[in-house]
Image (cartoon, rainbow, N blue to C red; front, side, top):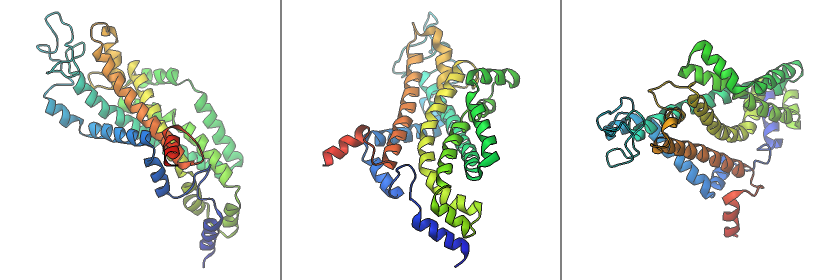
Length: 321
C-alpha cells in the first residue's frame, strides 16, 4: 500500500465524520430533515418558486398579459388609476397599467438567478480563500484574514452606490457587488473550521505519511466542511435576495422595465394609497422566499446537529416518544 493510501486509511479510521456536532451519514441527515415539517414545507415552497422562475416566460405567455409593456386601455381606469385585482388582472396592475402577477413571475426569474449565481460564486471564492488561509497559516493566514476583515468592514450601500455611479447599473455590476460583499463571511467561517481540522491527529498523521496538501484538502477537509458550508449557503441566499431587493429599491439594480421584486416596490411606492396591491404582492413574494430559505437553513442546521432542540423537530421528537 502506498504512503498516501496509508494516510487516507489513517484519516478514515480516526477522523470524526462531521465537524461541530454533525453526526451520521448524509442519508441520516436527510431523514432528520424530512421529519421537520417546517423544513419540508420550506423545501416544497422553494421548489415551487424555482419552477416558477424557470418557467416564468411560459407562464406569462399563458396569462396573455404583458409584464413589460403597459396596457393603457385596460390596465388603468378612466381616471388613470391602476386596476385592482380582478378576473382579468388577478393581482391588479401597477402605476402604468402593467400586470402585477406577470411582473412578479418574471421578477422571480431575475431575483432567483441573481441570488443563486451570486451565492454559488461567493461560496466558491470564500471556501477557496478560507481553506488556503486555514491550511497554511502563518503569513498567508495573516494576509487573508486582513483582507477578509477589510471587506467585512466596508459599508455596503456606500460602495455599491459608488460602483454604480462609476460603471452604471447593470446585472453584471449588481452581481459583482453582491459577490464582493458576500464571500468574506464564507471565508471567515471556512478558515475557522480548517484551523480546527488541521490540528487534529489524523491530519498530522496523513502529512507524516506523505499525503500532499491537495489530497488532504480533497479527501479530509472538504468532506468535513461540506455540511456547515451547505447550511450557510442556504442562509446566504435569502441575504442576497434582500441585498438585491435593497439595491433595486434604490435604483441600483436591474433597470426598468425589467422587473425585480425590490424594483417593483420602489416603482410603486408613491401609489401605495390608491394601489396597495402593487406593493403588497411583491412584498409577500419577498417574504415567502426569504422565510423559506431561512427555515430550510435552520432545518439543515438542526439535522446536522441532532443534539440541538429547535423548532418543530423538537415537537416531532416528543410526539414520537
